[in-house]
Every structure is written in structure tokens, then in C-alpha cells.
Length: 357
Image (cartoon, rainbow, N blue to C red; front, side, top):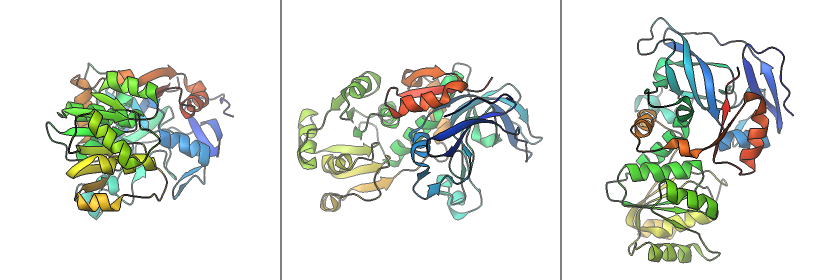
């Protein structure tokens, strides 16, 4: 149970262990480099990974061993800049990219910094997250928000950047047909990015009909509810109902569910493209024969890389994607634990936690 602290210089929402969170007043972070920026965090969204750490204390080999501040989907206001900062000044409103790579390894130097083995990513052990009053980031990981964007929208640039990266991994081209499995926040944003990039059909797949109704009003051109039959049978019905006689050009899984992965492989055309964006069980049964004989391009997708955040800001500020519609509600910082409970219970698409006052 979280209990509020009396002092609030840098009030933070901290995970101590499984289902054990509390508020703690922590030291205000200092600028350590000339290009660092001190931010006051205004809004933070709750991600599934935050909920997973809260419920289980780990994700894969990332284990919470020491108290860790949660949160990584944030937007904030610049309070102080280092001597080498040129593009930002006090008062600027920014979307916060929450992972800092080493910048020196082979992966960083080849332009895939999201795969940096020494990535310091917010709310991934042992690094603290952004559910605090203050946070420090390098200048180039702060994206200035245009005047027509709110800080609430800025906090949604993180999941939108995830959707951008997944969709870019697919190699989507103008006019392509796309099937997205999973109508949670990331799946919905993949639908929106695909549509914004020129997809001619965007089919959203889920077992939750309420989510699918929202998907249809948000970005999907059609929806599909799978039946309790084989993956191949569901794929055939999906193709029949959506006039995809040879299959879809692109399939994206944003669910991590084994039946979705299997159906996605079967729904693709010869030479189609598949991207695994959702995380599920470590090992599943995979339709390897279909993947081989169709000569599919199969890729994973992890977080976001160069240009993804900037593209997210552009898609939102240009009006091509209305991320405000994903915000179910905003809550005070003191109510952070209840907000986590609501997200776990599936009572919201995206809940934003206001920064400490």
C-alpha cells in the first residue's frame, strides 16, 4: 500500500517489491554533463511493463532488487539546462525519450541504439523511472512540443514511438494491406501509424469487442473477432471477410498471444512481412512451414530508435494521429497506485498520472 510522504521536494512513486509501492522524497537530480536538462515531470502514462514489474517484480532477466521509481511514458517542462544545451531553454515543454544508450558500442554506431547492451532505460532495473517530480535527460532525448500540442499528448509520444518503430520494421508501403493483432494501446497506435503511412486496409483483431469498436472509430478500416478454431481457419475467415484473397501484405502482432502469432503467419500473402511487437511467453509453437514456404520477412521490434520519437511528434502535431482519444482519464500523483490497479483490471486504455505539485 502506498502512503504519501510529508516532504515533497522530489516526491517519487517507488516499487520496493512485488505489489509493494510507496511514496518517497528523493534528492533532486543534478545536471552531470553540459548537455543535460533538468525537467519537471508533468504527466506520465502507465505502461504494461510498469504493471508487470509491480505485479511480478521482474520482466525476464530484469529483476527489481533495489527500490526503483516506476514510469517511463512522460512529458515535462524544462527547468534548467547545461552549458552546452543549444536547442532548449527554461519553460520549453518536451516529450521525454526515457532510454539513454552508451553511444559508443557497435549497435549504437550502426544506428540501432535501442539495441545498446548498456542502455540505461527508465524503470528498467537498476534504473529509476520518471514517476517523480524531477528527472534529468540529455538534450537530444527531449523533443520540444509544438504550440498546438499539450503536455498530455506529449506523454503519449512514448507509446506512439513504439508504434512507429513496429510499423517501420514491417517495411510498409503506400497501399499495403495490414492486419494488427491486439487492440491495446500499442496495437491501436500501430493501426493509426499504418493508416497515416498510406495503408489501404487496416484490420484490427482482438477478442474484446469494446476495444474493437474503439479501434474502428480510431484508425482501423475493419475489425475481426477470432473464433475458437485453428489459426489457419481463423486466418482464412479473416481473408474472406476482408477481401484479401491472397493474404495481407503486413501482419503485426501487438498481443504476444500464441494464437495471434500463429494466425498472423497464416494470414500473410506470399512474400509478406511479419513483425513481433507484443511480448508473451518465452517459447511458443510457431508455424515454421508456412513462414518458410511463403518466404516471409519476420522481424522483432524493441522500443524505438533514431527518428521514431520525432516522427511520433510530427504525426500527432500534424493531426494525422489524435492521441488524445486514447486518454481515458487523468489522476493526481497521490492516486498513482489506484491508477495502476485500474490499468491492471482493464478499466482504461491509457491513464495519465499528473506530476507531483
